[in-house]
Amino acid sequence: MKYTIEKTGRFEYAHRLPSHPRKCKNLHGHSAEFVVRIGGVSRLNRNAMVIDFGDLNLFIESMIDRYDHKTILAGKDKEIFQAEIAEEVIFVDTEPTAEIIATNILTSFYNFVDPRIQYQYLEVDFFEGPKSKITVRLER
Image (cartoon, rainbow, N blue to C red; front, top):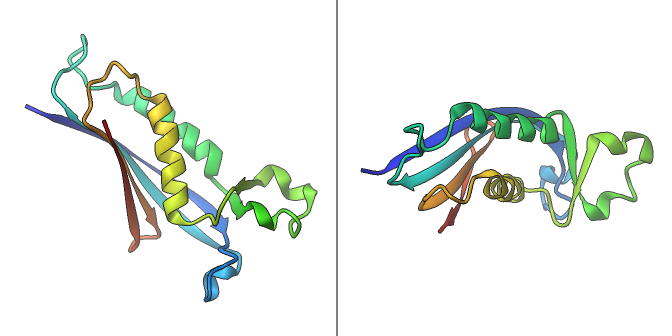
């Protein structure tokens, strides 16, 4: 028997893709939803769980705190945006695409999950609005 556990979070954010040839090069916002998933677990912990949903919720809340109502920009945009909004801006090394945001969430999730959990994969679904989704998976 294999178990998969997941938890969902939501946040609002703005970004722009400076190299995009169409309207995404302009600053715009999204309502994002993300799902973190631990999959392929064959052995439960001493509490008969993969992981406690309360612990997963701590991770979800940390991602909401990190991204909600923030502006996510490419590092090369630092010159354009003034210091007075710096606390509400997250700069990333590349274009802040849905793929990059999903990868950053997955990296944080990997660092959060107890390495004693014998999972086959960690996964993040990231929805940029209700109709567009990227999935990124880290297999063990």
